[in-house]
Image (cartoon, rainbow, N blue to C red):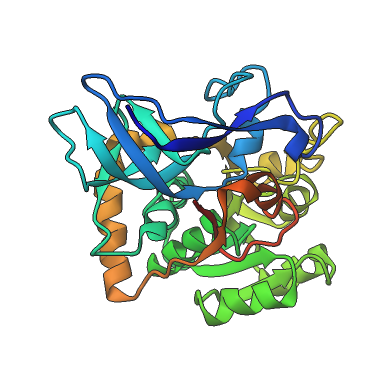
Length: 334
């Protein structure tokens, strides 16, 4: 019988507005024994993502909501400490849905092996994780950038936006990032190679878009929604593409989601706006991962992680995403 204890965050109620510690139950329970076909994983890092707020809501979405009383869903990387599955051995490192807890015990379906000797483990939650996959497929498959295109990325200093902008540069585009604060904008240009940056907190967004995109926006990669989406719609070029990858400005709304008032720009410019869910492209993750690993090795792509220590800090650390406090991929070190 295991003598280990497992700390867990369970969803206690559906949040209204921003999620708080009161929306979770933090408990410590004996670590469950594994059954035939199962594995036991010691979680080392957990991915904190804006999508987690949506997973707490009841109602129809692209994925079933987290049930009340269930361990909060989270992607993570960890080390297998016990296995009764022929494909996984003790000592293997894996990536997958591990939950906000110290240990995962269960069927390893959906878990993938990763190599910590090639790259630090947090990178497998960033550029080579779901955020990297989101950037890759939303930009290349949905956005379809062409060399010379002007590409605008909102939430550009975040996990998905920073990777999407770098991939656009690799593909020969001119890339403008929208972020909050001078430090983030400086990072976009100096660290990630963006051609320009717009500080939406300290300058007029419409004037800045006109300055940075004098010929219009060919491809808008949106992670923010709301007023930012509305502003960029007014600058669309002919046959522009708008990719709806996220809408972080809307996730904590207590009122109805704010839709785009300037959507007729799509009609005038014969543009298209298309939503994106990363799991639609799951069968091609391997190919994308290999290509991005090559870019990382060549120095063409940089992965930036913002690591916070302590499982017990989860509710407060999650809010960093919505307060704009993270610089790069937000990761919780268990």
